[in-house]
Image (cartoon, rainbow, N blue to C red; front, side, top):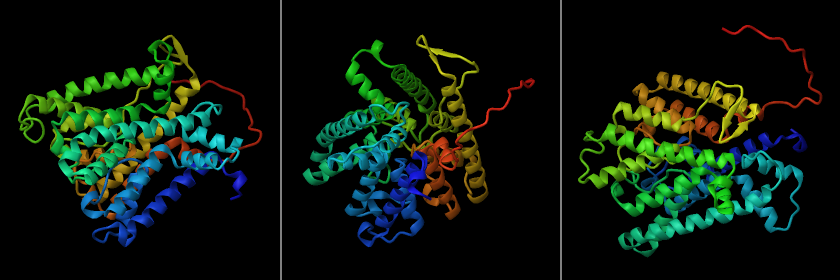
Length: 414
């Protein structure tokens, strides 16, 4: 394949695949692990880190050395902010000229509608990201430095700050952060990180520059309002559903702990993957509700959609519908395969697949027991979920120089 003929979609696919492959090799090195791991587990961890998912077949803290954990952290940062973003930043630091093809790549990587201003957006992306991570690291260190000492406390603060902001869900405890279920500092800081990270850099920058809700773009308004609404509804629903469940909220000592647990677990399913209660012990109703949260979206049956006195272009609706349909197909195929290869409850398999496809990282505790085929399926689904269904399909499409336009004809529906 000639380099000049590679589309931006193909370039992103190749760059991301290379990052996963490189991460797998590094994690398989003896210096990376405390105990030997096989290639499939190294590949699974590398894919989960690069896709900022958080699912894992082995425990991060007890399996990987500090070197291995740092590799995972770098993969999370590269995957979260985008390997192409770092590549372009490197060229900018070297004083290289950024051409049209590079700007087009950044447009695709940053999911922007226009090519103009992407380099400025890239600079702001790094400034905002590193600033937020450092501020969060400071607040987490207030809790963990007194508990673990300076070196370990700061390291744990840095690791979880980067993991949370990039919505990765990796933690350095086997039980994630369930030991801090009622800790206000940990709950507010981590939840704040993945809520801010989940809004997206375009929205964050829009808020910083305009400082007025009325002046925000339609995209920013929709993201903010929907995030607040979904989080509030989710907190109430999970609190009600799990209040009497002895495996989750019922045995927590105080009402405050129950509220913190509901708050944290309600905000996590969007993309974060952290958990402060045992997901596997939740009621089926809560599991189904969480699955919906991980796969949430809306489609309105109108040819013209109006939000906040703004019309959304038909092409956006078609693209959204296409993504929803393709995602539905991918999730169903993956779940069907797992029902053939795994000896687990259907709800647990569906939950795992949706969590992987949504790059969320929550699990009912079945990840480590997946078969070889099951691990491959989840690896593929995490990859597809990260790059996006349309990007994956368009990377295999060929451009036609002069597409033919055929006569239109109506068909009967219904």
